[in-house]
Length: 219
Image (cartoon, rainbow, N blue to C red; front, side, top):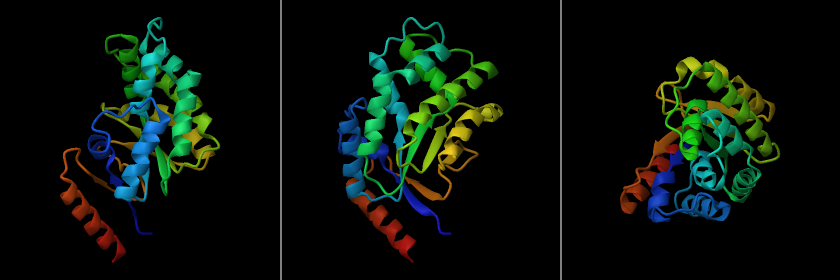
């Protein structure tokens, strides 16, 4: 089966359409950005960067009393307002195939620790295991959403921890979605050929590239 084309224009769209000032805590702003970008640069699939939304929404969640990055992550992912805002964004997005892009457990811990005002923690196995459980519970809010995949993005060297991702993989599989880990040694989104558009790309060059890609795909 021929791979579908995933044009990763998220950073480019934020810079060009949103002027770099998108309110990632607003489902209307987030879905508006994605829907406008999709109309200009049609992609066979789009990955919604939940890390951006969690970072923005976490500003209004009281995490200062949490004693660790894992505790802060649990509170962040369990926050009802954050959950509802993200779920609304998912329902407002209009794309052929939608994936949730979620920071990998270690990255989620670092994100939550920073939001809570903690220094970067020394991440260990037990923390990853707990974080994966909280992330799996969080993903259950999308049970009735139209999704195709969940992509965990690793920015840290996390290969030894991947066997702790099983709670996330179990939830993803139970809903019939595809699970993948975005890392140098793993494909971003299985079944898709990904082309990244740089945020500083010139519009005329980007349009020419997309036309060429679509033409090649049609051959």
